[in-house]
Length: 183
Ligand code: HEC
Image (cartoon, rainbow, N blue to C red; front, side):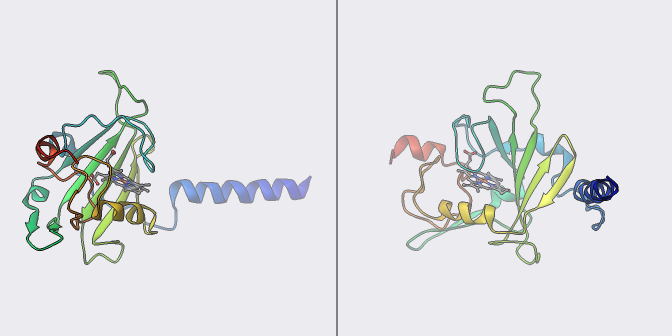
């Protein structure tokens, strides 16, 4: 009985450490509170299932800096988002949210090439909006799948020329290209 109590106490402490990440001091948020006013990167309704983000409704927005991305000539083309770009994707808890529904999570990419936590030049961030907890993903889980954006893929503009798209699936302003040039 005593052993069980000790084990239970240890587990509680371990859990508390996980939840409050007591070893690390809190970082200021990398996602500014006004991000909901930024431009969206696509007019396509994102409510279909995709691997890695489930089938929940999603809205992708980009800050002004990110709209200065460049498209270099050459074959294949090279797209580069500038340092300081923030792309934030709201993820809702349901597929078809009503006016009262709020996003439950943000996944974000922040261009910060010299940051030691960057992977492929981006910080990969998950923010749980219920817990208010923001985590920089330092494994290669996010970047490995987003590497598929750097070749032909089935989303948005579909990257028909196999451009290096800087790990971004939805390139702002490419929706019209899809209509004019269905792949
Ligand atoms: C298995 C594949 C996969 C994984 C893993 C994945 N993503 Fe994505 N992500 C996508 C796809 C596909 C899109 C296209 C938009 C959509 O339909 O939601 C996307 C879009 C995004 C966008 C909008 C920018 C863009 O590429 O258009 C952000 C930001 C994002 N993901 C962040 C993350 C973060 C952070 C992680 C890791 C926690 C992650 N993603 C893991 C597939 C993935």
